[in-house]
Length: 188
Image 1 (spheres, rainbow, N blue to C red):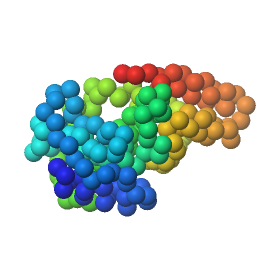
Image 2 (image 1 turned 90 degrees about the horizontal axis):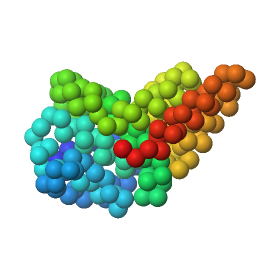
Image 3 (image 1 turned 90 degrees about the vertical axis):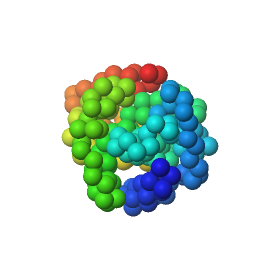
């Protein structure tokens, strides 16, 4: 899995246009409570049960995307968990098809859809999608734009994206941001 992470890192650096902060250290765990994690020291932790399973790709990509997240630190993550996990998870879903194609990896999408249909972070993604829908913004641009903004500034950045809207439309957008922000601050 370490070699796969290296390959994912290379492709993402090309797709995103900036370097990863991954330390290069992969820790394997047998803890059933941990599928994948990216501690703040910028290592990656993966559960040994993922090895050889097609579904591992989504976890590898998700954890690697955290290494591209601006302002990834414990304080900001704890205050705004959905602004990080929702953004990273949706980036994983959006970038995965082209990333796997670039790696020459073929996995039936149904493998991923089964996990993602009931994923814990869907609540965050739904809130972010409500915000994005008001902007009529292309998904990849929206999420990669947020990923490039420090976590603690993402809420304000999202509000600012609505500044160009006029009167009532801007008010409705800011209401949507406010409702979404309440969800994105929740710890799941």
